[in-house]
Amino acid sequence: MFAAEALALWLLVGAAAPAADAYDQTFDLAASGEVVATVRAGCGGCAWGAAGREAAALRLAIDGTYSQHLVLARGETPAEYRLSLGTLPAGRHRLTIERDAALSAKGAGPATISVDPLQPSADRDEALAQSMAPILFARANTVGKFTDLPILMWYEVVPTDRGRQFRYSVIFTNEDGGTATDRLMATWGRTTDIEYVYGVELDGSGRVVAEQFQGPGHEFPPFHGRHEARHPLLWVSTDNNMVSESGSTTIRYAPAPERFDLSNRSREAVMDRHPWSYAVASEEMTREGKIADEGPGHNTIPDPRRFVYLEACGDVGDAALAFAVDVRGTWIASDRGVREYRIVRDGCFRAAIPLPPGIHASDIRALRAMAYTRAPSKDQPPVRPKAPVMLRRVNTLFMLDDQYRPGPALLQWRGAGTINADGAPFDLPIK
Image (cartoon, rainbow, N blue to C red; front, side):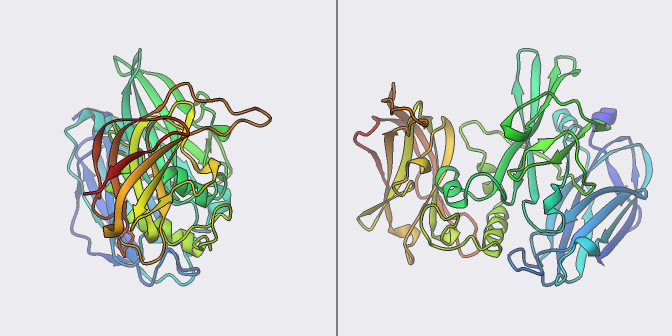
């Protein structure tokens, strides 16, 4: 154990049975450190996609002091929610959880609540990462609105010239501002909002040498805000979920981050590890009236279960990239003929292609990649790309099942596909 850098072992004093709308338990910490709790909870009649009964909101307190809120977005069946309870000293503590009637949907039934204790982590980096995880304060126009909820947090550890940086990112159920829903699906393969929110750089001795956050306008200024122990306090401040060092809201969330290696994978792979995130996102789209087959430019999409989702990696350079699938002899493209619906970034990326009603995964025969001259900036002529697009991997190609969970991968490929802008496409058959 590493004192404050260790995930604390906490032992329940007595056994607390699942309770309705309230939970009260005393626990002992053998040593000071970070406490991560797994709350198992569901609420009767709750459905994230149904207006008026979206979710129950729970208020958590430690030793009588407010800790955070938990919104039960995953419905009736008790589900696991991993939460950071912060840095606590050794000794006896009391965890209380109660329903917040003011922030719960009027039609949400009683919440069933239980808590699982965790064993201490033997991984020093894991304990250290938990101790520096950000606490997020709700965006003012989301409080009580069941929108743009932060549901998952993860971190990466990357080397720097001075040591290493811990990078924290958050998945929100949607974004009320920013990229339109149909363009999100075409160029990102999702309707959730995924944002890097905070980074902290440590030198070789573990001393903090720099902090930053992603602020409005996607800028990355140094973080000079407040901390709670080592946890930075961040306020979600824009409709596309950028954060600031201060704000007016007091409702806050503290999902416990998990480590994720994104080598040769996109950020959306975190959603694949938690398949329920697709269902929550789809339900929010339904409730907000964004599920409609109106075509490009309407901020709506067809049923998410009608899409085929893909993840690929490569070098797009100064070109633009789109994909298509062969469905019973007809090619259907991700960009749907709209230049702005093409991918213009390197690395690993997702796209999603809407298919006609009644199409199943077994009807998809091939995947095609197509490169284009990138749309010019305003008042500028198009410039032919300097180099072809290089496609190096296709990690997955899948559809969602009836429960909005990712199905089996239809295609995986490694190689070197060269695609000239406005030239011949690159095709991969599905065997």
